[in-house]
Length: 586
Picture 1 (cartoon, one colour):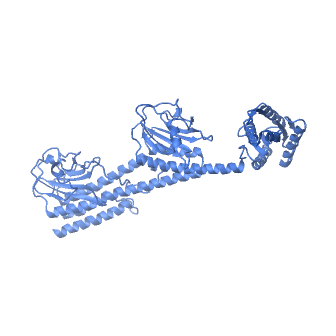
Picture 2 (cartoon, one colour):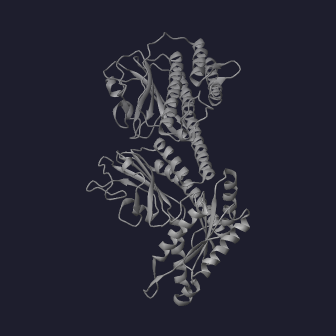
Picture 3 (cartoon, one colour):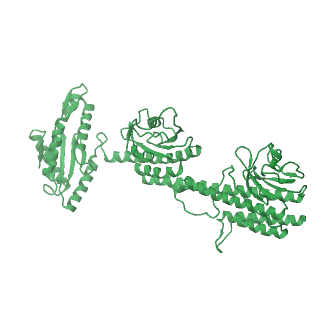
C-alpha cells in the first residue's frame, strides 16, 4: 500500500509539472493540434490515479464564489500571443476578461484536484476554501453527494468546529470523532451527520493560499495514508494555483508596459498638441472610470488655456472653451499647483471646473486631474466619475504615467517650435525673418509660374524711424515696431499672404494671386490704418507714425527674384522722394 501511495504521488507530481509546461507554452501541442490545458492534464492525472483505486461515481456540485486572493494574475492558457492594441491592453474590460479567464483556469485546477482526492479517498464532501479580505475562508469549489452544502459558506477563526483551529493560521487537521451538529462546520445548511474530517493548508510563496477539506459520515474514517495523500495534493495544488495567477499578472504587466511604450512612441513620433490630446482622449475612457473627460492646453499668452477635447456629460458645453489659469476655478488651481489631485467633490456646494457659466452636473461625485508638462504645467487632463472614491492609487499611477509621457512629448515639441521660430522668425516682432522671406518668395514665384497667376511684392518702411528712436528712446521704438508688425499681419489674408521683417524698420509683403493694382489697394488700406493708429510714448504723449510703400509685380515688372526685389525697392525710394506716407508702383 505504501509503495502504491508513493507511486501515485509521483505520477501526480510529474503530471502537474507537464501540465504547467503546457500551460506556459500556451496550452496547445502545435504539431498535433490537440489542446492540452492544465485542467486537461489533471483529467489525465485522475485517470492515472483511478487505475490504482476506483471509487463509485459521485454526483458533483461545483460552487464558485467571490473570493479575495492576492490579485497576482490574469491570463488565459489558450490566449498567449494574440496582438492587442495599446488602448485595449490598458482597458478595464480587457483586464476583467483576462481575470475571468484565469478564474476559470483556477476552477479547473481545483476541480481536477478534488477529483484526484475523490478517486483516492473515501469521503463525503471534498472542498477548497480561499482566504477573504476580512480574515475568513470562503468556499470556492466542492464535490459532494450532499444536497445541503452552504455555497456561501465562510469559515472564521474562533467560530465553529473548524474555526477553533484557525486562530493561529491554517493547520493540518485530522478530527477523528465529531459529535457536534454539522451546521457548526458552517459549510452545511443542516445537520448531515459528519463524524470525521481532515484538512490541509495550500501554501505557495511562503503564504497560506487556502485549505482543502475532506469529511466523512463515519468516525475515525481517515488513515494516516489518507491524511498524507491530502497533504501532498494540497502542497501541489497551492503552487499550481498561485503560479497560474502569477503568470497572468506578469502577462498583464508586460502588456501594460508594452502598451505604454507604444503610446509614448506615438507621442514623440507625432509631436503635435492636437495629436497628443486626441490620443489621450482615445485611451483614458478605456482605462479609467470616466463619465466626463476634458483636456485643456495653455495658450501662448500664458494666462489662459483652452479645452481641446471634451467627452461625456455635457461635453458640448466645454469643448473649445477658453478660461483663465489665474482664477479660482478647479482648473486654475490645478494649473497653478502643477500637482496630481484626486478626491470627491464637495457635498456642500458646486465646485466650478473651468467657468462660472459652464454646464453644471450634480451627479459627478469624484475626479482625478493630472498636469501635462515637466517643469511647468502646459496642459491638464481632468477625469470625472459619478461614483465617489472612483480613482484609487492604480488609476492615479496609470494616468500619471500617461500624462508624464505626454508632458515630455509636449516639452520636446515646444523646444522644437522655439528652435524653429528662432531660425525662421524675427525675435522682436515674431514675423518671418529675411532669410525665410527669401525662400517663401522663391516658392510663391515658382507656384505663380506653374499656375500662370500673378504675385506682387510690397516693400515698406516706417518714415523717420530714427527720429522716433532719438526722441523717445529705443524701447519705445521697439513698441512701434511690434505695433506696426501686428497691424501689417492682421491686414493681409491669413495663411495666404506673407509678412516679413525685411530689416531694421523695413517690412516685406508677398501678396499671392494679386496684381500690382490689387497690391496698391491693399498697401493704401494699410497705410491709412497705420497713419490713424496712435502710440503712447513713455511720457504719455500720443505719437503717430507713417509708412511708405513700393510695389512690383512678377512677370510684369521683373522675371527674376533679385530684379523683383530691386524694383519694389526702387518704387519705395520713389515714394520717399515724393514726400513719404504714400504708395508707389514701379
